[in-house]
Length: 259
Length: 339
Image 1 (cartoon, each protein chain N blue to C red):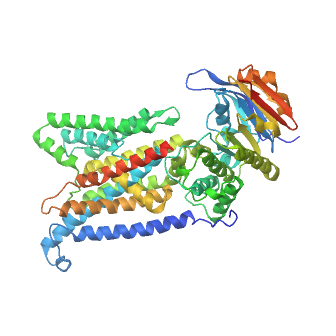
Image 2: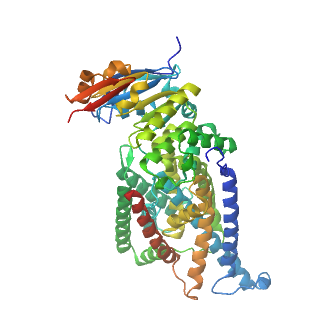
């Protein structure tokens, strides 16, 4: 039995004196596994993933990365294991896309040294893997939301992480690029044993995932394989809408809402 | 087309190139600043004629060096503050840091120009305290939770400036006429200095602070891209913010207490470096240090010579140049956010 790569136990979180927005959430990601976190808006998904990324300290509970508490990891070393793709990246300055991707090499660059040719190659590879090679010389501020998302994914890949955390990466991507994203993640799982935890509202995309975690008001409403979770009655409860319908079609599950 | 994409020039080489070019620009500016003035100085008579000698070594050279030190300081803090707040319109002047420093210094001048605490001139200490207070205030107002609101940032900067200006006026009104005049003269901003001693004293504080700020270039570069991403890449965001704030307040406090509130240098110069050499803060910060020095030396040379023998306040020159640049940046920014 292999060790889980990331293990979160009974996480609680609340914003400054507010109510708990994540309550008793546990999650295990094995090496090379793909996990989707689903749930209605405001159900605590982004808060959960930020805790896993080390951005928020859980109020209670523990997160183990490779058996070691996440907070005990040196930030630089942690950044070689976990990469995080936020929902959107505001751009205040017209950085070149390639420079942004290159910033993903920081955890490998000693202090007071600069990234070298090897890092530049890694950055170009990452851009290529994210399907954004043609954007390398473009200015980040001139890119569309979807293009920015691809560049930020490339930055995360340049970190050569073992675990990739994505917060709604598909929200601003078109149909083709959504499919490309899932293919890229599946390929990286095959070639590099990458683990993925991804928040998404695109239930269609989760058919090939190993596990789904459905959150409702900060608590786990359902967890299991796509087959187990993508069911009418569960999704109606998760999204709080009685008109959610699902239908199996081959390997895929179609989900829609009767209007 | 993807596999054959050319490798970009490594960051180290880009920095070396930028700094080489800007060092030449600075040397040229120093030469121009030393050569031009309301009084002509002949190089030949520099050591034979005691008038020329005094003029050059007691007045002209110190003044050029003062421009160098203050210009470098304001520009490098401007670049750092822009990255820290992820706001291209930030600079010591627009964020009220200079204003806070000016208020602190005015209080100190009213209390007694030459007062010292433990050997440190009271004006320095008070100006630093004022700048620190302003930067903390602006930061507290603009930051709600994890988000820095760009509009709130600049508005709080404006308000801090207005409050400081009102404070300075009140002090001028209440204090004796000599101090009031001294405050007024100093507020206008001038690089007037006699002898080199004041400059060495400033550099004693400023040079280490510059180096410390440059040591944060990499972290600031990551912060300029995105705060959360910087944190996941291993930057301790809170610690970095606190230290950079304190360094900026220290640098601005010292420069304001010595040269008054000279505006917009910290705004124009980092953007000029960006336009020339790209966005990387590891180029922008040291580049701003060099170009800021060159810029203020040239602006001051213009101030000294344009209406010679009368002298324009150098703050007026930088303001006249900087105001339009600010407006241009504001317009460009609106174009991005409209996308």
